[in-house]
Image 1 (cartoon, rainbow, N blue to C red):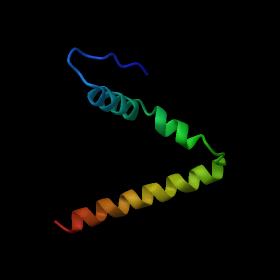
Image 2: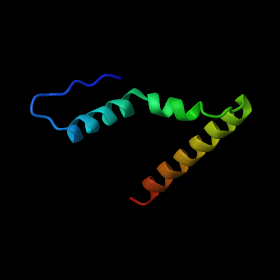
Image 3: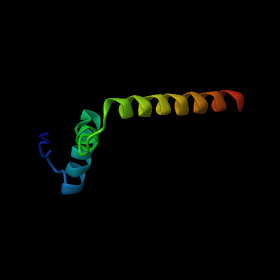
Image 4: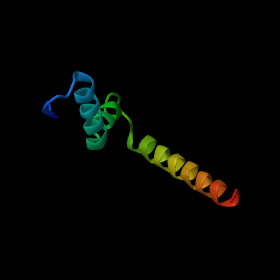
Length: 65
């Protein structure tokens, strides 16, 4: 990841842009996920849990309106 310093931009702004670009690229998320081994079955179970959680949240949001 490369971020060029803009004219009259301080370090804080540069760091903020770098952080935002890292978030958008997904590199940090990928690095963190690969720090430990996760079996295929564990990945599948996590995916199912995440989908169920998302479905419940969506359902709860639609019923509260």
